[in-house]
Amino acid sequence: MTIARPALSVLTRVRSALSSLGPSEARVADVVIERPDDVVGWSTAELAEAAGTSTATVIRACQSLGFRGFQHLRLELARSAPMVPRDEDDIAQNTFDDAVEAVRLAQESVDPAQIELVARALDDARRVVLVSNGFSGPPLQDFAMRLSTLGRGVEAPVDPLAQQFAAHTLGEGDLCLVLSYSGANVQTLRACQAAADRGARVAVITSYVRSPIGRTAHLVVATGPAGEAHDVDPFLARLGHTVVLHALHSALAPRSGVAEMRHVVAEALTED
Image (cartoon, rainbow, N blue to C red; front, top):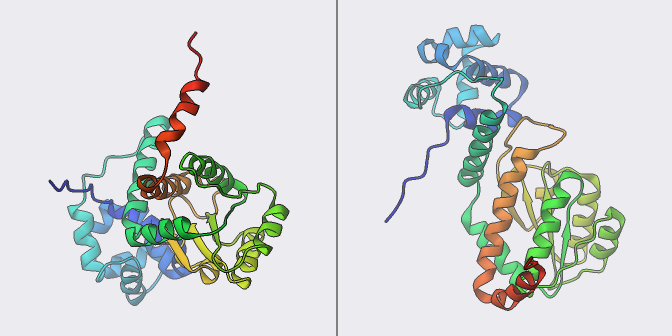
């Protein structure tokens, strides 16, 4: 039986594309996010006036956001779930709501075929080096340990310099698997470039389809830019990245010896 997926809200779609817009188009998107109930009843000219731009820019902005035009945007806004005012004091509820939207964004953004290709590359690689820095580091370190439960040994240096050393020793038949929220971390880029220059395949999990790291990689899994652009801690984006890593683990599990590792966990638990 096929179960319908919950639709991603129009406002989440607009937020996710905001960072890719130019200044004038971004002002249009900001007005849509801040005043969605008003936009439903406006004309193109009224939205243009509110955004301090032209009607032509409004139409371009709507198309850049994935709609056919302004009327299509208005229709989708009107069809979306009733817009309940957000209680800024309810931190816990807002955090859960944002997390749900971030995972939905990742679900709609990720191409499942790319996950299968990365899983196959992991399975086929002679050596695998994992590269990530900053806030992207912990999820990939966790993935390294989980791969070990499948009997798949990988190298996951924490130090950026050690990552560069490892990348420089890769060659044909090897894989450099990279996690980067922005796709623009200098240390991560250097390791990717070193691996690619030596004939290794480079697979990247990132938030943005278009980023410097994407131009170096052979395989890219993009989850969409959840949260505000340039957040110090891209927590919401990491949720999508973590789900992708789990999907990779699940894709590899059927051809692994995961059952042989369960006794390790069982023996680590105290009986007291």
